[in-house]
Length: 86
Image (cartoon, rainbow, N blue to C red; front, side):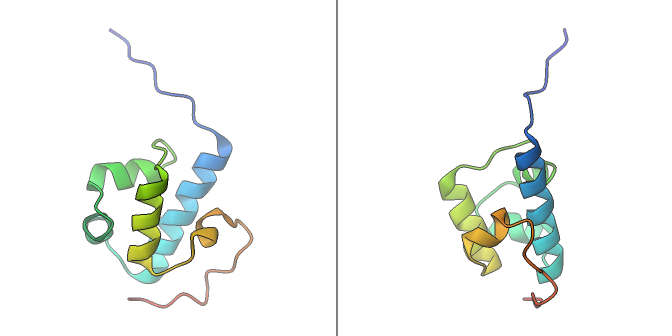
């Protein structure tokens, strides 16, 4: 049996890349951030790959755990070089 993957939008992939870049800049492991954001490591990994769309509550928990404004996840042009490790 073949199970098709859901269609992934380019904006979802870009948001996942931003979440990954912010997580790395902040010095979080995947497991630590998942725990602090009340996600499973699998769900966070899929979200970073753009294969899972987080709902608004999950995004809120994620940005709170990272100590960033929500807009930073969506702004592809924002400079991440000023983010410090937590």
